Amino acid sequence: MKTNRRTFIGTASAAAMFPGAAAFGQKKYDDGASDTEIKIGNTNPYSGPASSYGAIGKTIDTYWKVVNAAGGINGRKITFISLDDGYSPPKTVEVVRQLVEQDKIFALFQSLGTPCNTAIHKYMNQKKVPQLYVATGASKWGNPKEFPWTMGFQPDYHTEGVIYGKHALATVKDAKIAVLMQNDDFGRDYYDGFKLGLGKEASRIVKTVTYEVTDPTVDSQVIQLKDSGANVFFNICAPKAAAQAIRKAADIAWKPHQYVVNVSASVAAVMKPAGYENAQGVITAAYLKDATDHQWDNDDEMKAWRAWMDKNMPSANKADANHIYGYAVSTLMHETLKRCGNELTRANLMKQASSIQKLRVPLLLPGIFVNTSPTDFYPIQAVQLQRFKGETWDLFGEVMHAESS
Image (cartoon, rainbow, N blue to C red):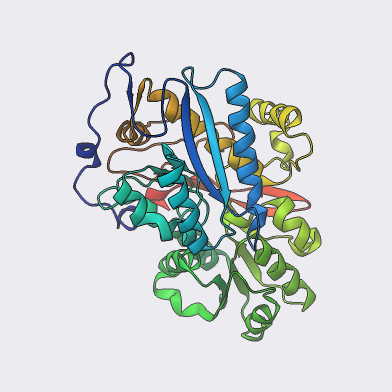
């Protein structure tokens, strides 16, 4: 699996583009940074078909407000500018141009969505503005040779898909597989990994149906999948469609072995709307602790996060995994900016982001760490499988690293 994860990574090192940092006391700045401020941009679908992800942007915004209230980072306050792109790539291009060319941001952080980030990928690298810790697991974000200004955060979709494919073959006798996938790079990345995991058994996929992110429902697609006679269902959907698909399968008495992608594993945003009774046994991959999982009730990191939420976002639904995700990735960005010291250049930001070893980010599952290098732009490379049981997720098996998955 290691070679597949590295498909996009060449032998040339990105280090040559990012010369060593100056001494901590020597101040150097690019656009968006000064003695008093660091200006960070973001895009998020606060409206539209993927608006449930808006919880991530709101959590990040709150995180920086709390950091600023405590004095900022190395004495500088964070100006966080988060714009709504509605999960529409043309809109993403428009608002990102505004952030880069008018607002003069220091970096773009956690811009959300595979199609949206794809639309600005070349632009950000041409402008040499960091597109850092993007909110999508597409494998293309780990390509420092061609795109040295872009880095992902979460485990990549391709590897996650491989894991599901292998698990289905190992656990379902005479597997006949049906796939519902979003018709874009997000869906294709998962699908390609899944087929790789099936290997010579890829012909077990008996039906694949796509949907558009703007489709009001996926009911007709799920009916087609049931009619194929499949006993395994791979649900490659964003939260709204993922919940609809789980519910519809139950409504038409289709009871396959189900997999749902990690980005749609939120109990509040997906499983509860789908109906807890309909989601029993659904499997996904995890790399973050889930607030609904009672094994973490006395966990120090979870208790600290709950206290933070109670104080700063008291009306938010803590069962929504997007809040944990937003908090965790913000702590990583916080640490990366802190390591820049007084050399707040974009090159140094990427240098620091690409030289993190064995960093424990709060709320990652035990045994999972952030590791990067100038030739490895995949910060998190491990997951653990979990099964939905009752009203929460139940972890099982061992932590699987990309190299051995």
